[in-house]
Amino acid sequence: MSDTQPNTHGSSRYFESEEQTELLKRGLVRVSIAAAGIDPLLDKRLNELRRALRSDAPAHLLGELLPDLERAVLAADQNRQQASSDTSKAVHKLIEQLQECEPPREVARALRALERQLGELAELPRKLPSLLGELQQLQQQALQHSEEQSSSGLWSRLLRRKQRAELQAGPLSDDEVAAPAAEQAAQDNTVASPPPEQEQEQEQPADSASNISGEEQHFSQLAAHIESILLRLLSELQVLETQQAARDRLREQVSKGLNWYELTAALDALCDLVLGAQQSRQADFERYLLQLNERLSQFQGNLEEAQNSYSGSLDAERELSGTIRGQVQVLNDSVRDADDLSSLKANVEARLNSLLENIDKARELREARDSEVAERLSTMVERIQAMEVEAQTFRHHLEEQRQQALIDSLTGLANRSGLQQRMDEEFERWQRYGGRLLLVVLDVDHFKSINDRFGHLAGDKVLRLIAQQVSRRLRKTDFIGRFGGEEFVILMPGVSPEQGIVALEELRSGIEGTPFHFKSEPVPVTISLGFTEFTRGDSLDSAFDRADKAMYQAKELGRNRVVHAATS
Ligand SMILES: Nc1nc2c(ncn2[C@@H]2O[C@H](COP(=O)(O)OP(=O)(O)OP(=O)(O)O)[C@@H](O)[C@H]2O)c(=O)[nH]1
View: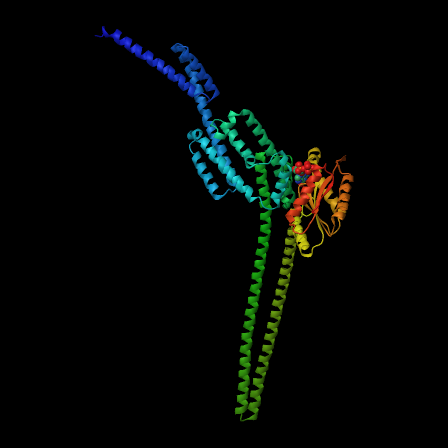
């Protein structure tokens, strides 16, 4: 049987294994196609394998390909793990940044849930498209919220004004604001499949490229705004002496330009400065309160002591007067009951002596008490005076700090808060008493190019000189404050538009004619001004907007000019 059957049996087994081999080869080819795109080296090896399988290469040749293929598979696996870990880190970081924007509670909760979903690295590439889609929506909500939070107040007005000026270049959208963060995630996400939006972009490479450059352009525009706000903040920030070097370093760094990551670090450093200064002032105040508390408790102790000794001496006095009264009574009794004159005389004499002694004692006691009270009183008066002096010094200190908080440390003019305060006052006065009031917006021309050509220090010097020049040329009743960056606002009460245009023209030509030099190089400086008169129905904002538009008109008309926004 073993001799008769092997052939039949053998040929059918051979036939089966050939068929199986063919099936296996085809399977391998398909698997290798499916695995394409994971890693360039692995692709190369799989290509070689496919070619060998399709050309029916002998087994030993296939065997020779296997070690390289195995190495490529291991390396691809390592790369995939690394990429998953990088992607996970990038998404974690993005979530962390969004959480730092203090999004609404439900968004913060959804972000935490999303973070938990990141979970297992092995699962990440599969989950990533939907995670990124969800993250993008949350990011949009968080940024919209943070924009809404900051959309009130003068800060945002500055941004809005700048944006309006750049509207021709295209408005900034939330997505553009979010672009850097999204870019980071996209850069870190090397292996994972892109979310649906990115897939669309891949299908249209030309559009996508132009979108990215557009985003970069918008980001750099936004970065310039952030930089100018940071510079303003830094120039207005009241820091401690020990923090001045750090503040100057930060200013220098910001003025050189920041990328997204440096911006985060700069914001951290600014935060440290603000908190440091704030904490030190708080500590000063707490120290003063403690001191005051101590003094007050000393004072209360003194009062109690004085009260005790006073009531003690009152008791002693009462006791003494009781004794005296008793002695007088005894004297009376002995006079009444006396039957012989000589013993009465002796008795009265003795009693009178003791009475006199007691009266002396009472006088001494009162004198001692009086001088003790006087001494305590004078100590208390001294303490009260010392406390008053301290309180006065502290009040001065507080007032000084309050005033400093309203002053721009670069130019010495009122800063935005000081300006706002004065604008509110002038506006209220104008509403109550009427009369004329002009509002002027002044902007230095091509200030950025002054910074770029001569450096930020030169820019700072120009701002200081302009502040001096303008202050010198205005009337005492006029008021100038630094609105921000290279922009100033002037209030001119009691001035008609006709008088205003003359004064402002003089100011403009005065600045144009002033020789500014930096390191003995002449720096050409001109200013553009827009102004308007407050009229019935105006609010501060409406008048400001008019003057602001007039200033932009002056820029559009070629700069170095005054434009009057007439109201009727
Ligand atoms: N040196 C210095 N520069 C500042 C300060 N605050 C803002 N800046 C810079 O001022 C520049 C303002 O530039 P832009 O808003 O582009 O205006 P501009 O160059 O004056 O151009 P026009 O207004 O159109 O004439 C920005 O580069 C800011 O970084 C500051 O305190 N010191």
